Length: 79
Image (cartoon, rainbow, N blue to C red; front, side):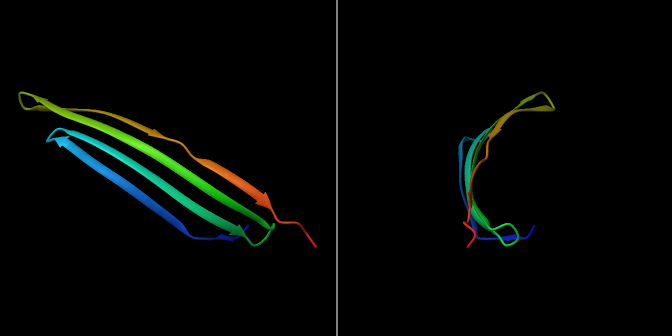
């Protein structure tokens, strides 16, 4: 199966303190399949929250990453 198409991504990074980071990203793509005559649109948002702290000389990191992907497919009618 051979596919091709454009994709674009957009991201936002916010660091409210030196030890806290919040990041939001979203990607979008559209793909054409040349073998089975189908088209696909994909949307993939994700977020990341990171908090770092130290106790003495030991550095700790707490983080949470959330992501999902959604895709819609349309088959082209055969003529």
